[in-house]
Length: 633
Image (cartoon, rainbow, N blue to C red; front, side, top):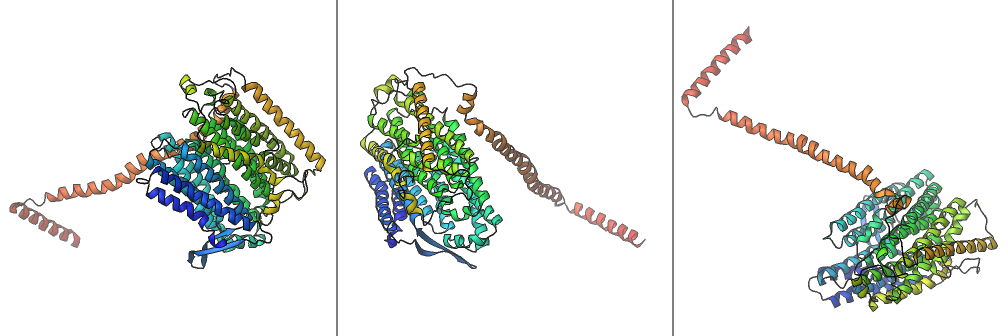
């Protein structure tokens, strides 16, 4: 099966080329067949690869295709590495990606055929880039996919390029990711200098002999790259603005592709981070800070997609917390479960927006439970999963993160628990404001309310099932010994590292008590949200005081605008007006004007009058005589 691995990324690339080049003459039906077909075929191939990887005694495949760079002693292969970690991500990317492609066939039906084909071409290229990222056997191939993902996010966020604000959101995403990418690129150069190679096998084998200071520097630079791609403080503000793109794009970015790239990169580099405790602590601190900040912002957002966007930033923070405390398997586990329920929630939000004729303000919704029965029940399942209610998927992965955080540092645990409680509250605030109470929109919207078509509801049903059963592959030892199938599967590649001196030793009884206590608190938060937001009359007044601060996202965008954007714009304007226009252009233009002036004056000497020439000659002779006379003196 190893010789067919190249088909997994190649098929989406072929789909991109066919739909992209043929967008002006392909029919909509052909666009659907190509756009969705290549992803489904890639998913089937990934399933076959996963079956072989799961076999006992499997050893990782490293498949070399050609020399990417071979000069001056530098040998970088264009090669793929297939092991347990990459196989798992292949399934998540192609599986969720296929469902989103199918969903898009109905959601984007209003687009013209050429733009429709362009949309699917971008989607295919997006998935190809992410597959290249996770399949690479060295950091350079990963970086190529990394950059491709950034490019596709720019193209898809700004898909409706006729809207200037959407273009600004796309540029913001691109620029902030480039800041992070610089850190990743510097880390690659440093690894080449230190280890003489950027292949995973070589770097990880030599890591234990490298100075801790070097490993710390490399891992911090890698983490800067992850901060940009996976939206962590301070490079997180692009992700909520990415909601400018079509809703299926939001699901693809937030669930299956782009934002998980940083998690994958650190999980893949777990050997380096384990040897650099300072970097690990930094990852944990940034992660829990981001999780807490984003959760507070989500409490007061009224745009259905913005709530989910800040929820994604918060959940990514929890994943980084897991990586930072050495629970790499827990972080990857939460990536997988989060992909299920967050894709479900975004596609469910898309179904609501579709029914509401592109209305996204949840304060203008309400009472949609009866009109959208399938969307309602699947969205409820997604909310239960992300809140951490057993036996839904989010319960198992989130509990594993909380347990690992407690064993490392009780402060991490308290902050992560606060984040989880706020998650339950704002997600059920979203649910009740959208589906309960009475309808608060216009009469025209109410008259046209209807359930979405089958291509949109079927992916919702599949994702709802995965959100229910997806966590069962990670049953904790407190329920059954050796039942954590994912941990056993990933152990050859991603081994979770227990703290050398754990802050707290948890017995099974203590873990069960904590689990029960957390569950009770989450149910209390859900009950509070129900009491506050499921009633008929909802307070729609503008927020004030601290609520206004949260509603305005802690004014972080305004702060960035004041301390970064405006000074840069002022400096740019000064350089343009003064340095460029007056100094540089003035100097260059002055030389030209000086030559022109001199030429005009010297031209007067060529008058054509012989008498003038004789006069000048006589004056010159007299001057020569005078000069000669005084020179001799």
